[in-house]
Length: 154
Image (cartoon, rainbow, N blue to C red; front, side):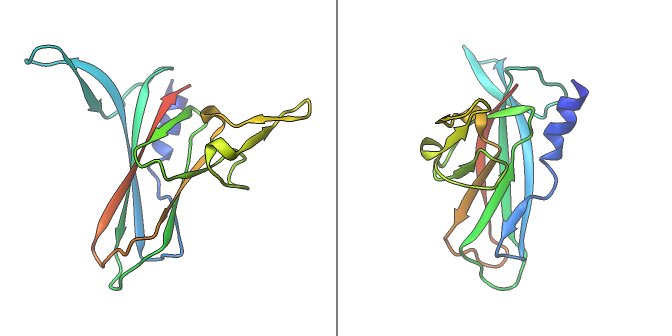
């Protein structure tokens, strides 16, 4: 369990922003829990994960900020997935993914995985090793944004 928690927090280390030295990246992870509040029914609560178990749903928020003095556009944010989680989905839906540790990229529905015994099969969310977003819009000095994705603890 401790190793799983450590792997989750490793994602909070600086990520990669390509073609934009002035872009700073931070990552936060939350576990999604069902809660019962004072209002009728239950609701979803996002908590900082002190412990996680297989099947727990996680929300990752990757924030990017232009720390430079000039406008930046057309940069790429790349996020590796810890092996302790499997990809679920993103909020935006415009990401490309890698299923081979970042060697090749594409839409999940267009990728194939090579099988150890030979042949291939269609890639599945559990095969995703990295996520990547292209940020084509202009980001003024001091401006920020974020991308969000969901994962499930293996």
